[in-house]
Length: 236
Image 1: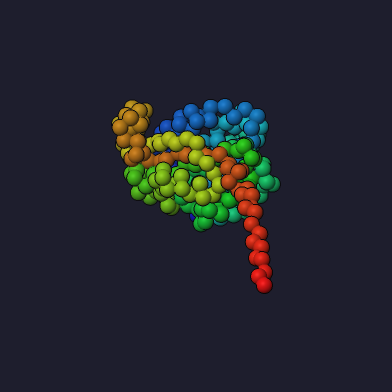
Image 2 (image 1 turned 90 degrees about the horizontal axis):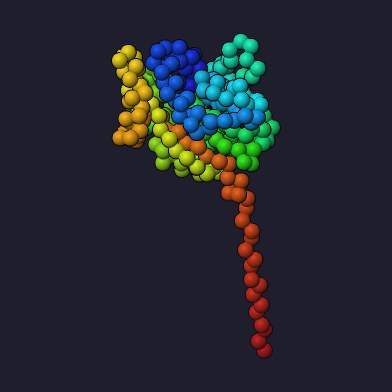
């Protein structure tokens, strides 16, 4: 993951970032309304969104790339933050019930290697939620935001990547229909723009959201087909 955590931190401290995070949290809360007692990992730069479940989850960890720093929790919060390389997550197999990947996949040096590690540390009934810049949306082309970094994805592209990494897509959503501007009138109108965009222009949303489950059966080798034995009779 090569995204700059300092860029993300600076963005989420602005009025534009605060509104964008609020809009996106509303979508995530609808998808995962209650994670009481579950073990949750946020990968990339997920701290602005993990706050949704920090008080519910049994364990809530934010992991950011080793080369860009740590996304720290507010002082006193009983949760963890750490750094690691994207292809060597520092957790045992089957460690987490849920993983949120935001500001991570689009900036990964090797997206498939990252998804393999996610598959490994997810429990067999675990769920992955991927938030990635939408290649058709305006946010993917504004480099002053973390959504404008790295490789954007269409929903179809993301679905194919997940399927090839042994995940099964269950649900899709889209968010950030407002333009990536700091104009106060637009920011105040964000809820209205979000509702209108979901009805009429969802394909041009700023981010695509994909929920996928770990497909354990896809990783199991199929039973070998028995080979028929051919006997040749000798002739005199």
